[in-house]
Every structure is written in structure tokens, then in C-alpha cells.
Image 1 (spheres, rainbow, N blue to C red):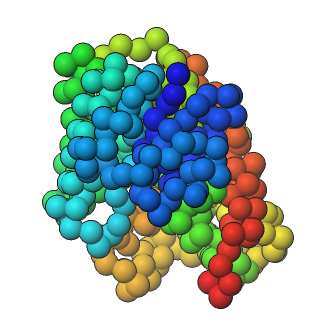
Image 2 (cartoon, rainbow, N blue to C red; image 1 turned 90 degrees about the vertical axis):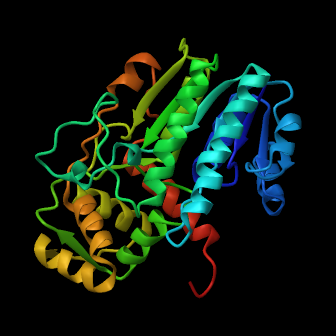
Length: 327
């Protein structure tokens, strides 16, 4: 039977389509009309529509066995009303559609639901799925909306829906428009900062490994609601220094590494951005990945198929092949 994917033209959704098509499964994608060609190139059936529109869901879920909800808003300047409409109300419609169709829901959540900037500190406790949620700042619309979206999914599961929430951290990969291009632009300058000692392990995961978790979650013997961290690539897990070096190798450049004290880096970031963003960026760059994903490996039999080195290589190759001139 068919699997429906929302956000199919995005970073995670497109990798999910590729993973499902690779094993011969029919895929349908609910996407904006402008993204129809992208979906068809990936080998999926495109259903034009918007996750906020109740009318499109009835036709989209006909005959599906699973619904992968990857559509989400992630724009720094969007209002709370926009985040709520897409990330919360859109998830509510997805959960209702899945329950009506008798399909399993795999919801792409985020480690943002845990809240708190302390997550990346070396001395932080390890974050399993049972770690108590921390307060979320009022202005962090993304984290607030993702936590509320998970609540929606959990409540739908109490009404009979089988639902899995996958919680990735920072995601990189082909078709990424945020993290991956920024790293590439830094490395291309051939002067790469090493913030702090550079021996920490960054909290990020390759999109292809998330897609592999989605595939296993669709078939795993799970009932009700279950959440899983999906937060690391296949071993060996690189340090901050090794991760940036893998980008340099994929780009064919030999950059000079400049050690920068953490306090100085935070000060520079504060000048370039807001104090809040500077704190978050510095914590991410210098902190240790605190998220434990053993539950997914144990219960879903998830085995990330890609190392960070191979994920970076694939990401850089796609970026170079699709780079717009002058950017």
C-alpha cells in the first residue's frame, strides 16, 4: 500500500521518498503546487495542497498504510500565528487524517521539544526520550510549536491512532537550504575557525539516516504513541574539527584552522546576531551532543546506514551540482 509524505520537497521529506522508493513502495506526497515537479522527479505521486487545508486531506489519505508528516515551518521571521497554523494545526489535520484512514503516523518532531539552552553543555545530563521537558522561551516559536505538535499527536494516539514521533537534532544533507550551505560557505573561505578545543561531537544527523528511521518506524511493532531520538550518524562520530575537515575534503580545499576561544567567539556572534542567537550558536558549536538514541536502535532496529563522512560527501556533491551562479 501507499505511504503519504508531507513536506516531500523538503530536506527530510525528500530523503524519505527516496528511501521508500528504493525499496519499491508507492509514495504519494502532499505538496505545494510549485513543488510538483520535484516530487515527480523523485518518483512519487504529487497531490497539490496545503497541510492547513482540511479539504485536501480526504483525497490524499485514500488507500494509504502510513503517513509521514515532515512538513514544518522553520523561518526566523515568521509570526507565532504562522508557526501555529502550520506546525500545530497542520499536525492536527495530519493526525486526524491518519486516524480516519487507519494509517500509522510517523511525525517528524525535533529535539527542540526538550527546551533549554543547557542541552549542549559538556556537563549536561544525557537526554533520553524520558528526560523532563525544560521551559521554552516565549519567543522561540519553533520549539513551542513543535512541542505543541507532539502533544497533538500524543492526544490523537489516546484516541486510537498508532503514532511515532522522531526527534532529530540539527539536520544536514542534500536539498538542505540552511545548515549545509552555511558550513560550505565557511569552509570555502579556506580559513576555518576551531571554536574551543574542537574535540566535542556536534549535535547533528544526516537526513538519509532520519529517512532510514522513518522506514523502520512504519513497520515496527509499536502501538499507541512512542517517541524516539534520532540524533547520530553511523560510527565513527566525528569531532567538531573532524566534521569541518570532512567538508573541506569533499570540497577539495585545504583550509587553515584558526583556534578561537569560546568566549571571544560568543562575543563576535553577539555583534553579528542577537544575544540569544549567539548563545545558542556558541552552545551548539562547542557543546557535546547530549541526545541518546539507543531506544530507536533497540525498539525500531534502526541502524543508521550513513557515516558522517559519507553524508557530508553526498551533501557537498549535491550542493556543487545544484549551486546557483553568483551565490
